[in-house]
Length: 136
Image 1 (tube, helix red, strand yellow):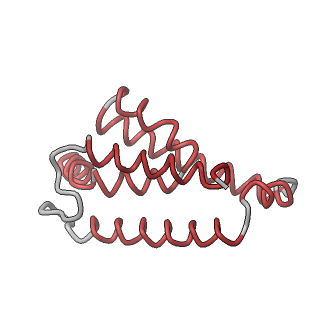
Image 2 (cartoon, one colour):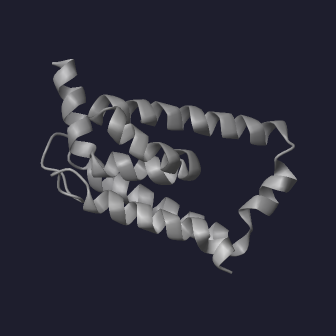
């Protein structure tokens, strides 16, 4: 039973550590430009997490991948997903440097969008302020 839930336990520990060691930025609300984006990102993360947990209860991920992994579209979706994860990794590097990217790298590879959405929501203000400054 623990084996089946192990990755969720690790994700919970990762989220707790990310929140404990986060920057000075407020966690759920933004006071900067495009402030509505931050709570929207949190809602998307919570909805995606809820759906992921729903899927976890109803299907075994590894058994499903054994069945569908042979299809070209499954492989294409995986490549597409990790291109996006790589782009977010680059954003992390640009926003906070190589050390922070190294800390997020394994969670990004294992949890993909569950980690990317968490990073983007937690660091929304610093990312948006960097983008806004670069366009002025």
